[in-house]
Image (cartoon, rainbow, N blue to C red):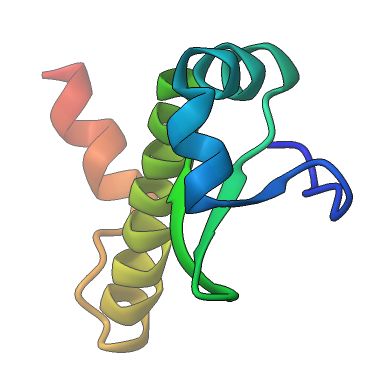
Length: 89
């Protein structure tokens, strides 16, 4: 995902409403999220589907790594040689 460009990627809700199709195309083309503000404060983030999928995949990988590290610390892992022997049978 690309970094937000403050001049282009923060829009008030009223502007977003009037140009929804334009902003949908823009987030998909630019691969950058759009921050939508309401009453001068951030209210929502619009992401393209591919950027959302990529973000979710990265989160799932990081969660797997965290779980693995926790299991290794608790000595719940399985020695490589044990796995290798079981695969050769």
